[in-house]
Image 1 (cartoon, rainbow, N blue to C red):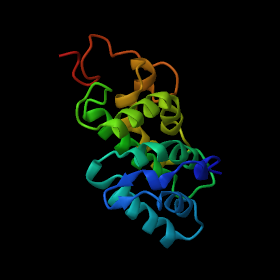
Image 2 (cartoon, helix red, strand yellow):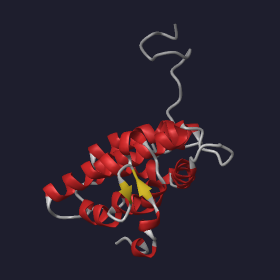
Image 3 (cartoon, rainbow, N blue to C red):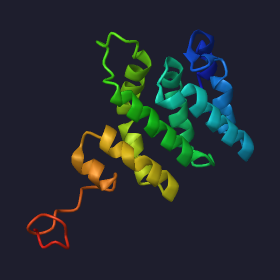
Length: 174
């Protein structure tokens, strides 16, 4: 798990409280069998690497590894990681993540691009057998899945047809 994690020079990146050298350890701790270690790693990730919704370069660099962890059916922290990914994606998209920004939104831009590349993964998470993973993934369908029918169906095929007359099924189309 986490192939290539140690090929990244985390010391050249920063998070809210300094260099990002701790990020590989946090990712490994998220995969730990120890519940307290996982909880502490998730708290630290939110507290430093995705601090107050910020998306740093190290946040973006961690995204592929978070997807790998979320996709591991044996990982006990999957729902929390999917929720974290949705938060990162939402923040990345909210700040107009384009390369033309004059402010340094490079972490946002990279994370937004990675999230769009992984839209299919969110469709899979929304159809997961684990209810908590499904719930965590649902917001990403509206944010990242360009195909409206697939987003509405949550990956389960085509969206159901609208009720006769339109409107809410119990409203009689009013």
